[in-house]
Amino acid sequence: MVAWEASLNLEEKRSDVMRRFCYRCGALEAEQGPLINGLCQRCFAEENRLLHVPQELEIIICGRCGAYMVEGKWHRVSGGDLVTEAAKMVALSSIRLAHSTLGEMKLLRPEDVPKVALSVRVRPDDGIIDVRATGKIHELQTEPQIEEAHMTFKIKRVTCDACALKNVHHYEAIVQVRGKFKRSDIVKTLERIAAEAGNQERMAFI
Image (cartoon, rainbow, N blue to C red; front, side, top):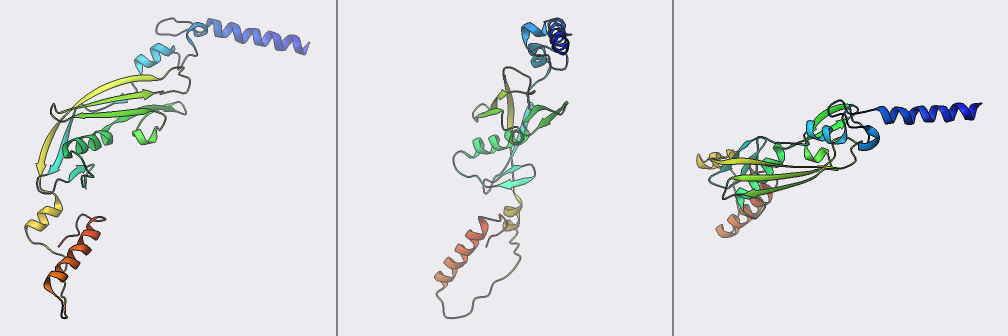
């Protein structure tokens, strides 16, 4: 009797799956894969974008030292082309990826969605940033979504806070060196100390 009831329940579940369909296009779940919030795989991908980016970005660069601003903070260029690095870092900070967690759709930073592959290519001569994302929004998706987007950017050159202070000869402290030392040795030592401090803090300068 128990085995018969279990078999009947299994058949009912199979029949239920056969009957379930996408409310948008009518595709059967049994043929197109598991429904996601009532949508088939294709309709879910069409109604839910993975990649979200702004249309235009403003890249703020210091015209004196070449530092660039990301989310209100100044950064030194680490090497390579200044505009390319600045545009890429600003773009990465502005990109959001859709992710469904616990039944709620959220827009997260790329670093918070590690399973989504993201590529950013800057075309400095054209003022365009190309972005490509590959990944899943929902765990029930059978195939990853592949989306591309393009952003334009403009360069705005300003004077950063550190250069502004240097320009008006603003200093936090005055160091007095006493003793019989060569002036050149003193200058070299102070420059080395300032350089070491400057690697950790942009506002450290002499």
